[in-house]
Amino acid sequence: MVGKTVLGRYRLLKSLGAGSNAEVFLAEPLRHPDLRVVVKRVHDHVVKSANFQRLFEAEVASMANFDHPYAVGLVEASLTDPIGPCLVMEYVPGVTLEDLLAVEKRLSVERVGRLLGYFCHALFAAHAAGIVHRDLKPANLMVLNPGTPHESLKVMDFGFAGFAAKPHIQIAELTGHGPIYALGTPAYVSPEMVRGDRVDARSDLYSVGVILFEMLCGRLPFEHQFLERLLAAHVKEPPPRFHKIGRADVPPAVEAVVQLALSKYPNERHQTAEQLLDAYSVAVGTDFLLETVPPGWEPPPKVSPAAETVDDASLRAAPLAHVPRASADPFHVTHEFEAYMPEKLAAAKLRGFVEDYGGQVVASEPGLIRMRLALPAGYKEHKTGSGIISWMTARRPSVTKGQEPIELELHMDRPDPNHARLYVVAAFRPLKDYPPKDATQWNERCEKVNFALRQYLGA
Image (tube, rainbow, N blue to C red; front, side, top):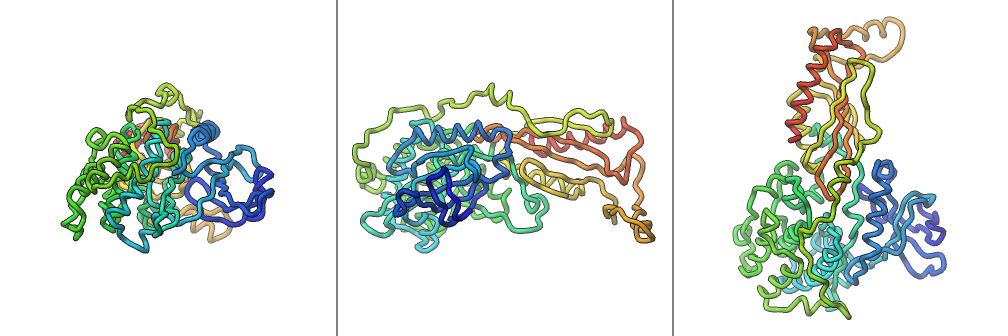
């Protein structure tokens, strides 16, 4: 992509990194080569999502309507550019809070307060505009002029952070073999997102609480290596008290603000970013709201943090695209259901299903997992060929009648990024090497497996 021109106006200079949804490039406007912008190109697999255009346009609209000095702004966007759908963003020179903490480990109570001031100014303006970030973490916070009297902060990825493609559960997450999961976003996720509850602005405040804990203590509140334990900790485990992890130098009043932000239920936390910042200011004895106020700023109108912003009817009507439907073959069976959990928790549950059923994961790509169940010991897939070798490899381990292996495809879609709701189509078919004879018996077996699968996913 480097060297290509976007929207006929911006030349891509270099890649700045890639995430699950997009790759980010540094670019220069052709008419102003001394300036810089950021171009975010959406990955191809995201574009293939059935709801991509609707979600993309909604995210661009929300970003276009939100302009704040402490948030990285949208310049323009295109669905039809030759390089693919992309967004042109403001370029902010600085260092991410993630990189800053990697070097400095902990920040002083006063410095945290000033950064929190910029952070919360952006948040309560976004929340007043009906925008919930949903992916707040140090990597999404840019610190400008770090370590100087002019240090400030800007929030990145407002609007776009919530856009999601089809759920993509990697093979390593289903088998335990391969790279260990990067904690990343799950380290900052709110309990209600893990539970599958409705998400509103107070979910962002929980993530702020995790970030505050990290800035003040030099570590995360929950440090479990395994994803399922980490997610369970957000829901059930109390954060450690500061003195028990060697951070007794943080004033108790400051710790109380952080612990309140980390409450398990939204009603128990501060209800707005303004309340959170005010509580921290009182605990320190400095008005960080006033210290970090943008020029010409006026308080946004008060809004209910739990205000409804999503049309349930549109969710209920959201179709699954590109999935198997009814087949004339009596041995091709499909079942549809909904599961209410984030995909990272679904990954942990599906891993348990695979292990308990002796399954073998064959492939995984966005929106699709393919696995085989009840394979006999020593089974190897037959390769077409001829001669004595082909004859030998064609001999398959025998199976008991009525216990033929099952090939299972899980087609998954997420109709709205605000909701931890998965639409699932489970498609069952026989392996070609073990065709069953009794369609009624086969359907009963598939029904039992589907029932178990629904139990694992809490459907």
